[in-house]
Structure formats: C-alpha cells, structure tokens
Image 1: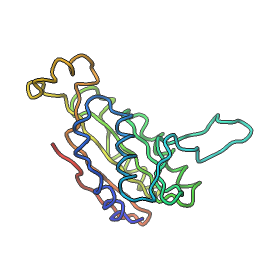
Image 2: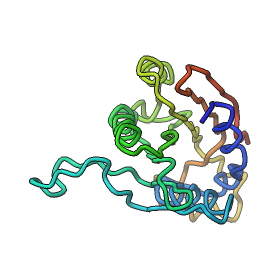
Image 3: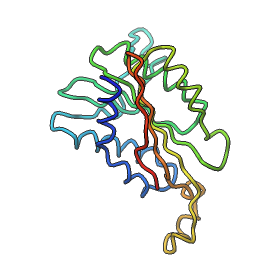
Length: 196
C-alpha cells in the first residue's frame, strides 16, 4: 500500500472518540482499533491476540512475538498492530511488526500506536526522530500513530472530578493524535487525526 492509501484508511477511523476514554486505556485502544476496522467493510475481521509470525516447533511458544492485533481482510492478515505506552519498548514493538511483514505475504503494513504524555514522567515521552530513522533505514511500510495525553483540568470535569482523582491513571486524557507513514518506496505521509 502507498503512504496515501494508508493515510486515507486511518482518516476513516473516528479518532475523536478516544478523547472520551480516560486513563491508561491500553485495552480500550485495542478495542477501538478493532471496532473501527470491522466497521470499514464486511470482509474485515480481527484476530485479537494475533498468531506469532514465527513458529518454533521444538520450543513451543518460547521466543515467539505476538502483536496485539492482526487486522484481516477476506480471512487474510493485512495489518499487524502494536499498542504501546512505554517509550523504551517502541523498538521492540517495531521489530515485532517487521517479523509479520517478513513472514506473512499478505501483510501490507505495520501499525504502531504510541501513547505518550505531554507533561509527566520522561519514560512516557517519545522521540519521533529515532523511531522514524529506524523505519526509513529499513525501508519498511509502517504507520506510526502518536496519541498525546495531558493531565485533566478537573475544574472542567465538574461531575467527574472526584471519580477521576481516585486513580493516578485516570487523570490523563488524549488531546492530540498525529500520524506518520513510510511506505516501501520511501514516500511519507503525515498529519493530524485529532486535536482537542
């Protein structure tokens, strides 16, 4: 797929709905991506807990990597998806997506959804340039979706304040979602999917 085709697909998702999911939201984001993909076409399906791209018979599941999702079309794997909040795991997740691209002929591109904080702990603030550099050097077809979270202004959430303050995870909301796509020909597409 070209970077434009991937961009057009991502733009069909209703990203603004993620702003109403508070907290860590890892499993909710996986659910959101699954629902949006299935909603696009009748022949679309999702494998939640995707099969490993590499099967080692002698060691069972040891050493296998499994993406969070495998988005399928007409029963064929199309897009492996990784959802990650920890910056130090981005390269590991990128390696996982590359294994799917290498081992499944029908895979068109990998999708890495990166959740990071506008303010807060540094381990949750990613560096776009380092991850983009790896993708560009390997000439892979990868889409990065970066969701930025900010601390909630509790004064704006009158009825929610007491409930949201009960858990450290719940004080975060998605305020911005950007994308960057690199296709096999080196074409890049980038832009914004949502801003509060």
